[in-house]
Amino acid sequence: MKNDITILWADDEIDLLKPQILFLEEKGYDVVAVSNGQDAIDKCTDPQVDLIFLDEGMPGLSGLETLQLIKEKRPSVPIVMITKNETEGLMEEAIGSQISDYLIKPVKSQQILLTIKKIVDNKRLVSEKTDSNYQKEFQKIFFTLQDALDAEQWFDIYKKLVHWEIQLDKTGATNMKEVLTSQKAEANVEFGKFIDKNYINWVNGKTKGPVMSHNLLTEKVFPLMTDKVPTFFILIDNLRFDQWKIIEPMISESFKLKSEDYFYSILPTATQYARNAIFAGMMPSEIEKRLPSLWLNDEDEGGKNMQEPEFLKDQIVRNRLNFKYTYHKILNHAEGKQLEENILNLMTSDFNAIVYNFVDMLSHARTEMEVLKELASDETAYRSLTRSWFDHSPLYNALRKLAEKKVRIIITTDHGTIRVNTPSKVVADRNTTTNLRYKSGKNLQFNKKDVFEVKNPGDACLPKQHISSTFIFAKEDCFFAYPNNYNYYVNYFKNTFQHGGVSLEEMIVPFAVFESF
View 1 (cartoon, rainbow, N blue to C red):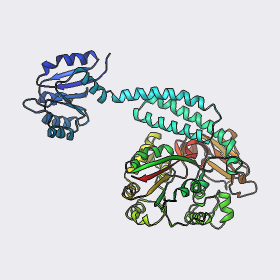
View 2 (cartoon, helix red, strand yellow):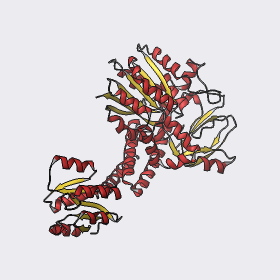
View 3 (spheres, rainbow, N blue to C red):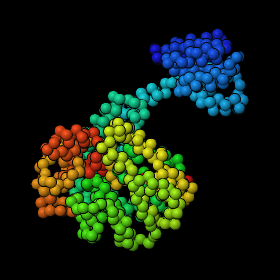
View 4 (cartoon, helix red, strand yellow):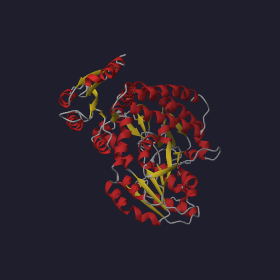
């Protein structure tokens, strides 16, 4: 069987290695044999060479000298050093020169084969195994979607889909990724039906639902704060569960993950509703009733998330909690650097709420900037860009400073986002909200199959701006478009990340608790 793998083998005793070379050729590998370092350097530039075996003890150019010169020409090619010399200094030098592995003479055929598979075949073998495992999981998920699932089971489904999405990213398995995308779309169809059936009952307390935005702090955060350990509640705006899974390993290097959980964002899955509900500990209609001077509706002028410190204060007082707290909102890099510099000063407070706004800004900027559309062209690239931001962010630096202290870190968000591709026509008056994933207004005309409709906003614990106001929320990957300039509107917003509606990506969001080692 042909492997399409070419091995360059350099050894001054190459004739003695003919049995091993014949063994590899029988296994389907092409072997180019040379007897000195200079020939190895000349041959290594051949792009067909996938792996190099390099004898350490060759006369003339030594193995280490040859290694350095090959690395200058082919820095990425894997090199296995073969040596009789087991001295620690030599091995350290070789490893420092970025060899992929080393073998001690005499080398056995099976030993060589295992090394090749580990280095060259690894990606292919992992890819094949991943594809096979997902194919098995596909059937399980398919049949599970036919069942009547509860909120917890939907989280399990979404978590599995995200897991396989990230695993298939690593292998580059295009066919399987297409299958997964299709299955995720199917899951969102069923999830939309689930929300249709249950959401109104949840928010009105008629049936027991999952933890949601408005009871997040009372259910999941405040009960943790009985041990006087300083708690840092870090809310990264618009952080999807898959984005969270990309940055989680980085945080786990500095902290111990105590629990990875979830909650459901309220509708609309938009900052002015979901985040206000988190800090107020109330649904929007309750906030408007209790704190009318602080609540702004969609039609009102002014910033809709300017009162979060007051909302938090009210919730703490309302729950008769006796602890010192702070609130910080980070909107740009300069504010992030300032927080990084002062983060240890917050250790004197019991509870520190930090809102970090970068990911949401990235999502919106991608809609308007062609260069960001190119950089984050699909889900995989969007996750990668999130990781890159976090890796170089003042937030990551601040967390590493906190890792030296006894603290509790909570990472969460207010809502997620979904990449929209399917336009859905809406006819409305000019006072209707402009959001692409939800609309609130009078006399709305729309395609019923594309939306979750709330005829009476009070049923969803939402403010009623007019007597005849209704809310509609886009489902699956739909986005609302007006008939006027329809084609322009569709072309501009298609393949953008939006939020406000009903989808797994927007509603089921991460909640993770870390503690110091």
